[in-house]
Image 1 (cartoon, helix red, strand yellow):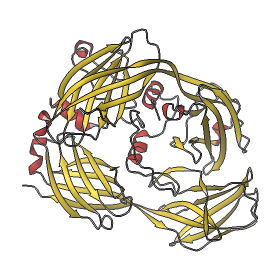
Image 2 (cartoon, helix red, strand yellow):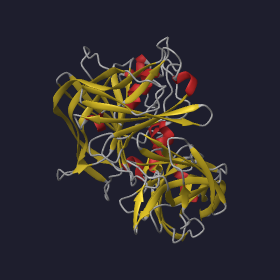
Image 3 (spheres, one colour):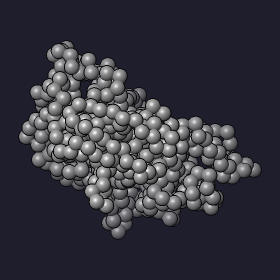
Image 4 (cartoon, helix red, strand yellow):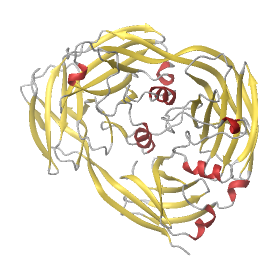
Length: 546
């Protein structure tokens, strides 16, 4: 999803206008590989070279800078909301001053400050467009670093528009760093696009439960298909599937359905929405849940809203930077732990701890592709640091990352350190007991079965010649059925997941669809399922104090 943060900031100038998904939660779940498409392997966190794929930091507050000091000192706190370690290091004067700029086509790129340590490289930059610029946001075809050999260095970026200063403030972050103390790199931005909001009216009927398709054929969008599904508590799930004539729109635009009431006020979602996951044929899928009465009230209107490129400027804005670890190497150290963690997961081990003034990282090796805990804290001498779990290029290796906030980095070597893991979610393979669906028709029917002692209610029905199978449990310890299948001989035919959920979010409902279904009976099986123990908490001392 591109340019989300600017859109959210604009909307939040009037917070009553619209409800947005919990981007922090989504970002955390993607970091943890737990954004699930029921039963599929967790989506691997991956960088898209030169493109920002998730926007997280400081979505809600427009930047403020005191005019007297704006020319010399910028306030970066808003974009560093979730990068407290960098903010703390900045306040302590530990950043490397760069202050290099380049101007081209009336646009000035300035790299202000750099942080390079043993964990990451982090740049604070600004981009000032020509005063005549009248768009809402900008994006780039490429943004990133190149090393001295010209090799591209992948990372991600976040930027915000500072209304008072008339420029974008942003950061570029990458896991890349050097083994030594210094590095000569090139930071560059290629081909800038000026972005505005596009909107197309669609004649969607919320009282029609059938599939509705609308051709768009404009701004790189081919069509949008909408499906609705009744939910508990008088709510309705609106699922949109969007195809594009311009494939770049899928990664460059935040496309969503906007519902408005008879007063042209946006209708807020009743639950967290999920945007922009990839469908089995490459379509752009989103799901939004609304109160039924609001969505079906008279005068409700629907629009497809998206980011639209108004103008493109080709060119490269590049700066040669001489980066150094000097200001951050004091207080940085690495400890090899090789500490078994079988109580966390079979074969798990904390290999090492890398400490810098901006961040602490723990490297965890394990069997399988995931570790079961969702939330992590680090207790450093009584100060709690909030953390998250990240994938690496190896499936059996994860990193626990903790931003350094509220700590004196110079005393860390003498502090006791303990890891706290909370909220355990375990995944299990389903059993061989079939769930028999009988008298299949357009009428909804329900049955209740059990797996591992947990009750599961199944609701099934035909819609548009497709069989929909929903599952849910009243026991909140049951995390949900991830996917179902039926047997054709010895071959497993899996249902296509229809709901996008965050593992461990407390919602154990699942929905699979079997397309072009024409039978009256079917035996389905559970592929795998999860359990959800929010109260499970594990404490592990990593090192004693001195």
